Length: 305
Image 1 (cartoon, rainbow, N blue to C red):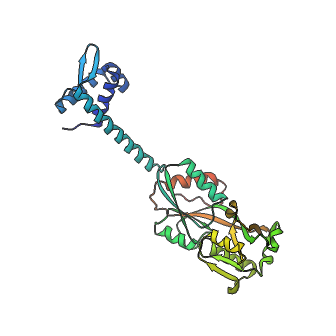
Image 2: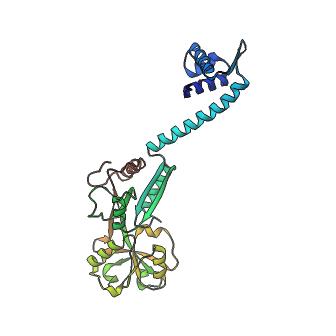
Image 3: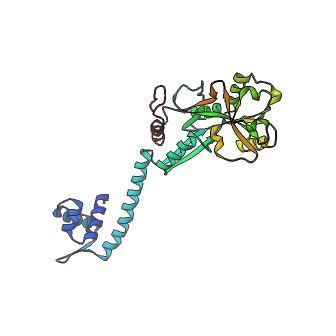
């Protein structure tokens, strides 16, 4: 004996209207087709589901029990179907994003908030790390997309230029340079730098070497801790810290942020989004579409998934 979802829906609609004519109109089928379908269903079940009188059609005691179960089955089926349709469109599911800069302010924060607003049913999981660590995770399918400063020569799959961020230096509030509107690289020559091993630490080291030839190991103190702990060390006078402007959205006790300038103005680092073309996560495509929408003046070719 086979009972199809269509049979259940027809029986439910018939019970709601108590008139086969009205039920048939609601289902957009002939009354005779509905009547025949209900009788076939009763025959297969070996039970009378409806009493048919001149006053209309109403469910029997057996029919009411059947209809209660039928409604539950139909509702569950519709919920499952809707969930999987949503998942296939990328409107639900999980998206793992690699970041190596602060998200207290700036374009990355705005992008993540926009995506959360548009797709509230997509669970967003963030992974922090250096650019090399994130590229490795990306290649191993541990993350779906990574935002990396200055690109990465190890990556030969899909990438997209997105935004740039200004480089800032975190100073103790009593530092002689804290009263400046901006700090120039040559004014940082004799400072002790706290260098994060996570996040954009390698990019900052390249900047220090290119801007001031800075490679004195006695003035470079590497720490494998997060931004908040590094800033605590800055406020305690252990050294100064380079960061991205995205870090300036939060207030840290005893810390002053100042832009770092060269001869052409604020120093900036460009960011790119990286992902695998073969990534089959349905939630990735809407995220990439949103990136292209938010940054329509991106230079270079727009890669496709």
